[in-house]
Length: 303
Length: 251
Image (cartoon, rainbow over all chains, first blue to last red; front, side, top):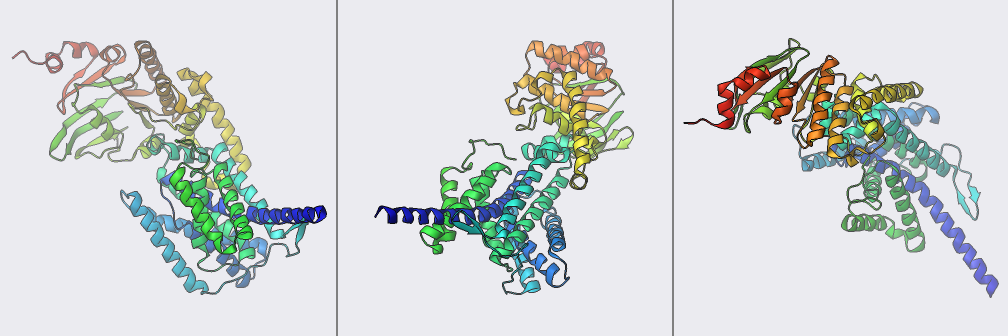
C-alpha cells in the first residue's frame, strides 16, 4: 500500500520534471523572442508584430543554407542569422522609416501588414510544406533524474544564456548600448547630446531580428518549421514580453520561462489541446490585472 | 560665431518672431531677455533645430545650419539644455554623462560586435573622462545615483555636465535658473562663468535679471517678437525702450 503510493509519487515527480525541463527550453525560445519585442518597443515605442516572421525566416534560411548551398550546420546558422537580419533592416528602412510623424496605431498596422507580406513571400519561396532541420548534435536522449531531454534542448538553453549575457553586456557596458538605453528613456534628450535616434531605431531592428532568427534556428530541429510558424511563436514571445513588463532584461527572460513551463505543465497535466489557450489566458490576465508586468512597479525601468 | 539673420516665425496666423537678427561673439556669455510672450523660447527652438523657421537663417561658424536636427547640431558642437530638465531617468548620473560623450566615441554597433575587447577599453576611457565633468559641475559624489532620484537643482547640474561632455563650442541654456533657490542660482552664475573660461560660448534665455546682469557680456532684448535692443548690461539697463517694455508706458 505505502509502497505503491511512493512509486506513484515518484512517477509524478518524474513527469513533473520532464514537463518542467521541456517547458524550460520552449520558455527560453519565448524569452529570446520577447526580448526582441522589448528592444524595439523601448527604442521606438513600436510593438513590432512582424517579430515572429524573423523567427520563421531564421529557420527557413537555415534550411536553404543546408539543403541548397550544402553548407555545414556551423556555417549555415550564421548565414541564416545574417540573411534574416538583412530582412529586418530592409523592413525598418522600407516600412517604418518612410512614415512621417507616425501614430502608434499606424505603426502597429504597418507591422501587421509587413508580417503578412513576409509570410506570403516565404510561402512563395519555401512552399506550404513543413520542413525539418537536423539537430545540431544528434538525437540521443540524455537522462536527467527520471526525465530525458534531447541534446538540442541543451543547445537551446546554452545559446539563450549566451545571447542574454551578450545583450546585457551590450546595453550596460558599451557606449553604443548606453546610447540606445538613453533613447528609451528620453528620445529628445538623446537627440540633444548628438545621438542619431533614427540610427538607434535601425540598430534596434538589427538586434531583435538577429535574436528572433537565432530563436527560430535553435527551435526548428525540435518543432519543425514552415512559412507560418512565426505567428504563434511571435504571439508567445509577445506574451513573455508582457509578463516581463516590456523589459529587455531578466524580467522578460523569467516571463518566457514561466510561460514555457506553465504551458508544458498544462499540456501534460490537463490536456495538450489547451496548450496555446494557457498562454493567451495568462496574457489576458496580465493585461487586465498587472499591465506593468508581473514584476514591474507602476513605473518600471524598461531597458 | 553664431549669427541669426532675419528670422521670422509664423504659427498659424500668429507672428511669433519678426525679422530678428543679431550675432554672438566667440567666448561671450550672451543673454536673451524679454517679457513673457516675447518669443525667446521660440527663437531658442529655432536655433537648436527643434522648430523650422518660416524664413531667415541661422549661421554657426559661417555655416548655414538652418533646419538641421538637434543631433546634427550636437555633432557640430552646438548643444542646449532645457528649462524642464531632460535626463535619462533610469540611468545613473555617471552614465548620463557618458552618453554625452557618445558622439566622440568611435564605437559603432558593428565595431562593438566585432571588437568586443576594444570596446571595453573605449568604455573605460569614457568612464574616466566623464568623471572630469562631474567634478567640474560639483556632483562627483552623486555619480552612482539614479538620475530620476536627483533633486531638481542637481538635475540641472547634471544636464549641464552632460552637455559639456559633448565638448561643445557653444552651449545654449533655456532658463537655467528656473526652479533654483537663490543660493543655487549664485553657484550657477559662477559655473556659467567657468564654462566661458573654458573657451565655450554661452547663450542663455533667462528671467532672473540679477543673474543676467551679473554674468552676461552682452544682452539681446526681445519684445513682441521683435528685437528691441542689444548691448552690454549697462546699456540695456539705461535703455528707455527696454524700461518701458518691462514696466509699461506712462501714457
